[in-house]
Image (spheres, one colour):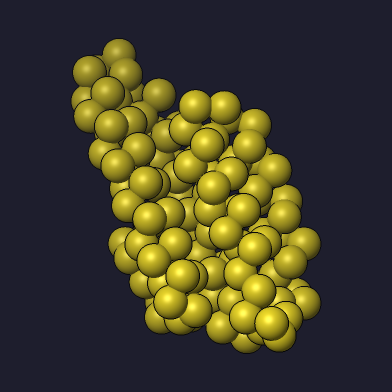
Length: 112
């Protein structure tokens, strides 16, 4: 198997992100791995790392907004939507990764 075909590291990052919904620190570990691998990865895989990094930062901002507005009760809705959005992005990214396809628009807010 060529290095270009080895999807182990981005697969682990996606799993760390999803595990982070239960054990928060794994998301940080996944983020660090994504930043470290981003520069040396094959071109198609770089889009996955960019997508993962973008997912982390956007999810963090949305979560902060959700927590800040919990007293208005709308924060609970924001947090729930953020969680589903986060899971959706990870699952869709995993599907692309398994097909060995690049994420077409890694900087988009929805699915790339």
